[in-house]
Image 1 (cartoon, rainbow, N blue to C red):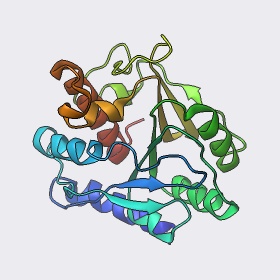
Image 2: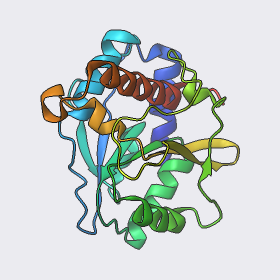
Image 3: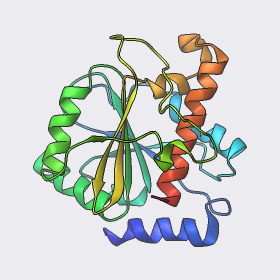
Length: 218
């Protein structure tokens, strides 16, 4: 099962993600946190990517549980929320296998997720720590250039946005956007009434993350 991620990604790379429709998913987790937050964010990001960077992603997101074998069907999984996160031992092993086998996880702190996700991801990769990625990292320089790193979408604690990564055997397997609220920036404009330039920056950064996840040009 774990090799299925490699198969899907390599089909995307060699046949072309532009020619084949691929599905991405939102991660459902336990602990009581609102994993289901930002209901319009992924569909809007998918639409933006299909229109602007030439992807052919299925317009509807799926929902997949952390411990499900179906996790391996998705080369890219997005996780968000505000509150508690709790991974079972099965979740931990399944997510680790998924990530070391070629899957990619984007975690977007929707404010309040930080202390929980750091604790749980330490169970997944006890040998790794989140490291802040330099602004020169390729994830900031796909089609769109972000020379100063992540854009700031919403203000919470007067902290700068930061992009952290888990790097396994030289490969970025998980990107964590903190104090940024990218997912809120992807939402329908009527939900937060963010200025359109801010929404565009958020969508462009999201497109960069997806592009990097598929191409993995470290």
